[in-house]
Image (cartoon, rainbow, N blue to C red; front, side):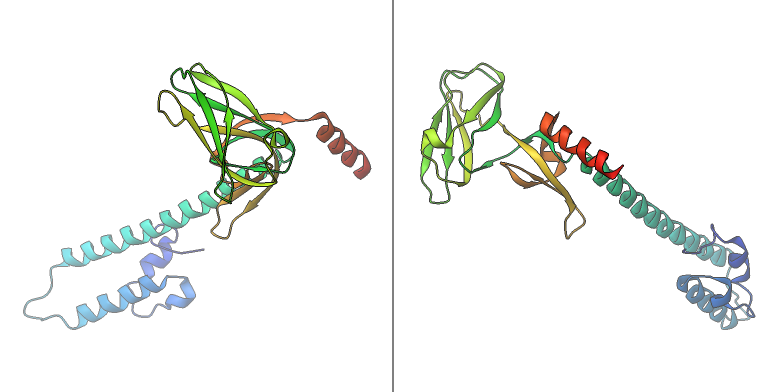
Length: 234
C-alpha cells in the first residue's frame, strides 16, 4: 500500500530527521527525494540571509497535496476496477437471455431475424437496405410507418440472401436516419485487451454493453437447461 503524509503520520513526522531510515519506515520515493532536497537546501543556505521558514512550510504543503492527489487517483482506479468486475458479473448472469441491441449491421445464417426500427416522425414509405460484403444492396420494404418503434423481420430465404454480414440502412420519406435494434441471444461476456467489456450477441456480433437496449429474459429452453445443470450439481 502506498504511504503518504495522510495515511502514515508517523513516517511523515520522521521524514525531516537526518537519522531516519526512509526504507524502513515506509516513506515513498517522492518523500525521500524531497527530504534530501530540503536538508540540502537548509545546509547550503546563506547564514547571513537565511531562507524564509514559510517557504519550507509551503513546500511541505505542496508535497502533501501531491501525495494526496496520487492516493486519490489510485483509489479512483481501484474503485473503477471493482465496478467493472461487478458489471461483468451482472452481465454474466444474463448470458442466455434474449436481448435487443442497437446495430448498424446484422449477421444472417438462413434463419429469420427480428428487430425494431424507431422513427421520430411518420414515414409514408420506409425501406431497409441490406448491403453485403460483395457491395450488392438488397431492399426490404417496411411500408408506411408511424412515429415510434415498429418491429420487423428479415427472412434471408425469402430474400435470397446467403449467409454473411450485412450493413443496414433505413431509408424514410422524411429523410431521417432512424436507429435499428436487432434481436439476439447474449452468448458471452468477456474483458477485452484494453480492459473494456465485450458482449457477444447472436445476429449482431461483438458489441459494448451500451449497445443493449432491452433485456427480454430467457426462453423456456434456456431456463430448463439451467435448471438441469443446477440439479446435476446437487
